[in-house]
Image (cartoon, rainbow over all chains, first blue to last red; front, side, top):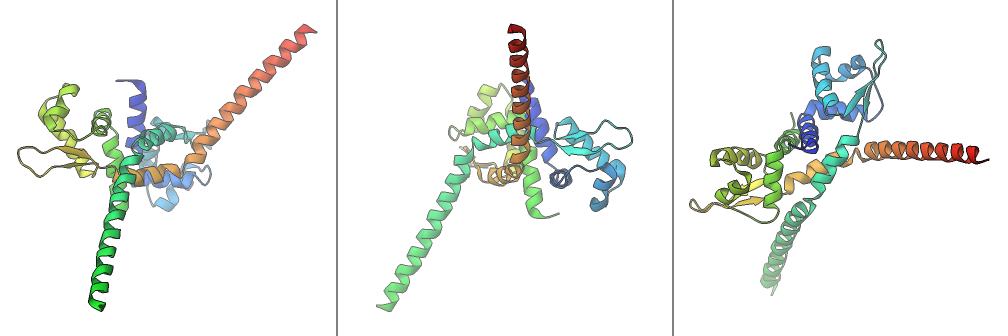
Length: 120
Length: 120
C-alpha cells in the first residue's frame, strides 16, 4: 500500500469522529493545553488524550516539547491532500444539485401552468 | 449527537480506506455491476460487497433495484458536506505552505549571499 494512501486513510479516519472534529475547531482559534481543551468538552483528560493521539498520528495536531506545558497546535497540512481527493468528485455533487434544481423548477412551472389554466 | 455530525462521520469513515476510495474512483467513470467491480481489485465478491455496504450506508453509492442486475452508482452528494468542513481549514494548510516557501526562500537567499561574499 503506498504511503500516500495510508496518510489519506489516517486523515479521513481521524476526521470520522465528532469530538475530534470539535477539537480541531477549537484549535483553529489558537493553541491550548490539554487541560484547557478538556474543559468545554466535559471529558476526562485520558479521553481527550486518546483523541489527541489519533489526531497526532494523522499529523493533524502537534504537541509542544516542554514537558510541563505542552500546547496542542493544529496542523492543517494533511487536510490539503484530503481536500484534493474530495475535489476530484466535485462534479458528482454539483450534478446531483443541478438535477434537484431542475426538478424543483419543473414542479414550479407545472404548478404555475395549472394555476394559469384554472384562471382562464 | 446531531444527524449532520453522524452523516459527516459516516462519510469520513467510508473514505478512510484505500480500497473504498479506489471503488469510488472506478465508479466515477460510470456505473458497474458488483461482478465487474470485483475484477480489477482481485477481491472476492463478499469482500467487495462488504466495502459497498459501508459506502452505501454513508450514501456514497446507490444500488439499482433490479434483483438480477443491480448496478452500483456513485453518489457524490455526501462529499459536499465533507468538502465544506475541510475547506474551513484551508488557511491552515496554505499558511504552512507559505511558511515552508518563506523558509526555502530564506535558505536560497542565505546561500546567494554567502556565494556573493566568497566571490569578493
